[in-house]
Amino acid sequence: MKRVLLIRLDKIGDLICTMCVDQVSFLKDWDQQWVIAKGLGFVPDHADPHRKYIELAKEDSKESLQKLRAFLKEYKPDLAVSFQAPWWVSYALWAEGVPVRAGVRSQWHSFLFLNKGLRQRRSLAVKHEAEYNLDVLKHALNNTSSDPAPVLKLQAPTNPELLAKHHLSAGGYVVVHPGMAGSALNWPIANYVEFIKQVRTHTQVVLTGTAADEKWLTDIKATFKGDTNVLCLQGLLKASELFTVLKNAKAVVVPSTGVAHMAASLGATVLGIYPHVRVQKPVRWAARGPHVHIFEAPTLNPDGSHCDGTHCEEFHCMEKITVEQLLHTLSSL
Image 1 (cartoon, rainbow, N blue to C red):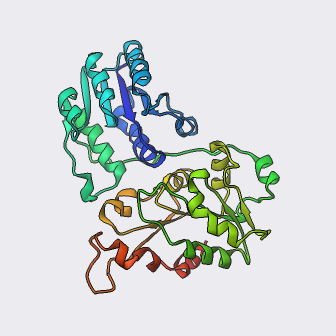
Image 2: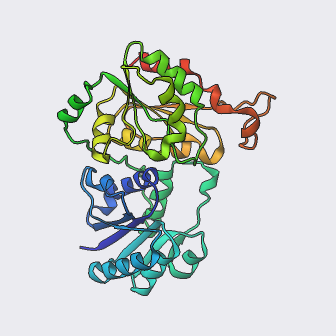
Image 3: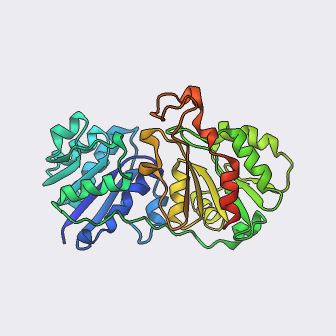
């Protein structure tokens, strides 16, 4: 059986938009291994089917390079596909003599160490990130099929004890996850606050996030401090527990961040909030799953011009996605 090494050393959303491509029919006879960023093992661990993987720390290039080279000596892949990785990954593939070294041809090391590179202009955002990744895989294997990119399926642990601990009932609460890493425009905090005010009158609201999301959660937590119908679980959930909370929610309200992709892949109902800036648009970054609703900022600026992503500080297009739009969708679920 031929062996393929699939590499994506990036964030959660990027990984979910990449890991799905290994489900294509033309890889069914290949043994597959993934190389992912340290700390993201919970994604392949909860994937259906389970993926084999190793984790590497991007910030520790010396130790990670040694670990990767040792793994390559043992695994001996026939093909390696680098969807996103630093220079030392490309170097390791070359140094260990991987026969076919495929990937995105953009940075200097991709020209020097890869022998099956593909030039892409992802900044044009004419297709989804998953489709761009599938194109790289097809190029690596000289495949010309028109198969679309599959959707990654994640499974949440059955954990009734966790729900009971926080007095949650399946389908009886709405998750609001306002935090993000800042790679896209977010909905204004005032809109999140107003949305929660409207929802908490008839449905419990659960706030999720990590310490890194504090700037998005500070005002929201202060507004609803002491409100028994707004539960804050920031920093209290392990990844597997977050999966359970997302899966059992009536809906998950979230901007363009990894949690949107996680929730969608779990099959949860997602109300995703996206900007119209070209490189951030949902056409490229939308969460993909069976129950995803996308809310995109309008394209028309107040001065009558069409959004080109250059007036974000002037026009604040994200506030034009109204609370009423999300409430209407939520009421129809």
